[in-house]
Image (cartoon, helix red, strand yellow):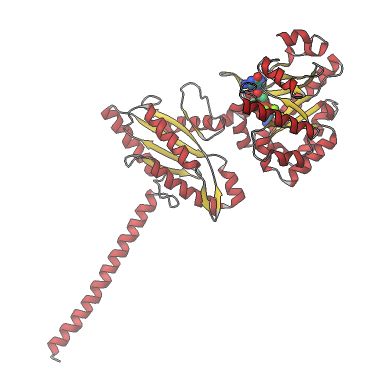
Length: 467
Ligand code: C2E
Ligand code: MG
Ligand code: MG
């Protein structure tokens, strides 16, 4: 070959190698740079924006709002009881769920909106150019519904719900940090009401996160018990008093248990709160015994978290001994809805408690899943029929038939049957006619402070019954 041609080929080949190398190098560098940019902006797991991008976009959106006189909404989402899923199913499955939820979140909002993962199971959503609060409600509802759909993880169907707190700028606050803080506290209010819901921030209502507030409530003795009597339909006597927890909040007044117990169950405060309730109920039962002679038992509601603690029987014993009260003076209620989490350890605890002398009732009977199984498996003395079974009785024929059957079931199994939420005379007549043992409800009395109840024990029952 001609020397020139050889030189040409060698040079050319070398050059083409060099060129290819250069191109490859450039592509790799580009990819790596893109990767770095991506990692800096997006959450690895869900592909949503990350925290820092979210704040950038939020600040831009706020500036745009001020310029164009429009409004934006910030939604803060936290999954309910997600820790439990992580603990029981493992982090890998937890991650798979988070990934699906991220995907569903993106599908629930418009292109111009931003969904971000703020860390753990917390997400933030920025809705721009909102036209009305109703629009925001629609999106919030859609997000909650999408999240709650079951997720297939390794052949199992898992489900999780979310709680959303919503703040609107410029109506509710002045800057990005405040916006997030208010959404966060509104989210806790949604959780405190049982989760799977949204709450708008309401100025002035929130004085700190509910966790801190509950800690303070315990420290400052803001928790107290109201009592609601139970009437035996055969003998027309008071046969029990249910202790119902109230929070005397310094700003909001009397707060009912459904507003804070679900949150206390989530953050663990239910354990000290539950112990406080037991102690207050035991002290009151003792006082009544001392002032009124023999007094019917006081019923105390227990959270399943309390009986999951192996130390529960010891706690109960300590509480009883502190005021020298026999265990028979306390009747313990467990909500049926919670019993599906029952384990052998829980069953053992219930047996121990029963052996100590406390009676056991299943509360809200008729609202849960496999009621019949509990009736056999648990060492119980009675059931409390949920008020929902009673609403349309006696007018609604099917409901009446059902209620009759449930009473008969309880009686056949030798259980004491108490109907809850009895509010009308026709319900009392129906329950009496069909063999229900006892009733509790507004018809007889709403829950009242302990100081307003002793008259029921001193033979002055007519007064209570007509009042
Ligand atoms: P529950 O144990 O089923 O208590 C009955 C609830 O029905 C009470 O609500 C009571 O005020 C209400 N009620 C009574 N009579 C009537 C009526 O005629 N009509 C209607 N519509 N309602 C009536 P409350 O006090 O708000 O308690 C709600 C739930 O909170 C309780 O349901 C119980 O599950 C839970 N709870 C209450 N105190 C405690 C506690 O100390 N610890 C735990 N873990 N849970 C508690
Ligand atoms: Mg109860
Ligand atoms: Mg109940």
